[in-house]
Amino acid sequence: MISYIKWISTFLVLSGILLTNLNIYPLNIFIHGSGALGWSLAGYLSSDRAILTNFGLQIPLFLIGYFNFLI
View (cartoon, helix red, strand yellow):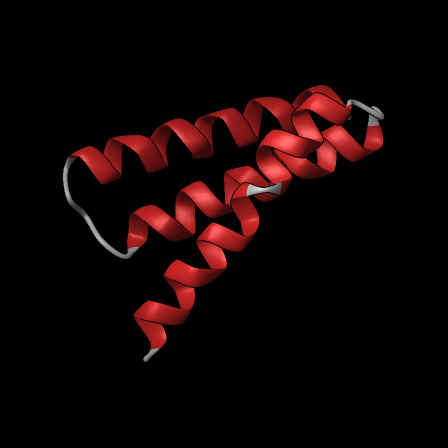
């Protein structure tokens, strides 16, 4: 189960990076943010603090992007 979450999240993060490089906004923050949420969940489920720290700290940054898009 965790393996599937990691692979799907990896695809979403890499797709979000590609969309950022192609300057496709705001889709990039929604796709990459979904991947960060998935990796945070995987880090939590596997008790991996390094993964949880890396991706968990990205979530507030994506929230800022969502907020800027909505206003």
